[in-house]
Image (cartoon, rainbow, N blue to C red; front, top):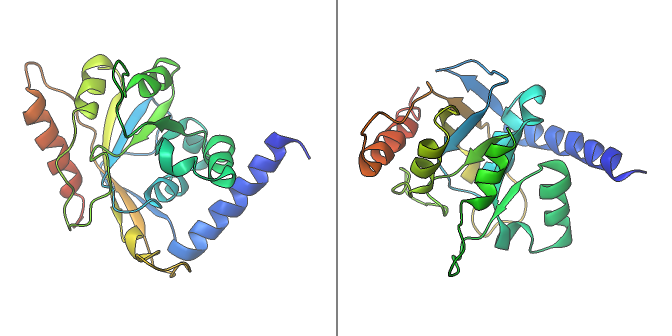
Length: 207
């Protein structure tokens, strides 16, 4: 069986499993699903966030949208690496910055190629009810790619599917709410933009 065919089959099986466990409901509250270049940015409480938001997108958007994945976690085993590469077409980022390295370079490359991306601006998973402060990456990408549509999203309940310390997933109804697009305003400071972006994500929690 060819690698591409195998990846499609695994993708459909994984999609079915995720939807069976979570429902993977997409709620397009602030914008319709549209095949335009976007940066989806969302809260981050679980490694399953990547899978959840991927599964919530319709097929025509999954094919043009690449999730951002922490390289140290998602390449730890050959299976994780194969799934994130062959099935999700993920963009790997290093969470540990080294001297002379631009951590945004892989994201810039993906956006330059015309892809949409799924970004978690907190950088690392949080465990509080509200997201941690957003890091500067989202601002820097918005500044460099003003034509790309910025879409906030709130992922509901996914951290409860695989509670800490458990190895068997728990079926829990989950959803992703997509909000109204936003833009970096002229002369808006980095801090003001990041606070506004975080507030846009939090505002979707109770929609």
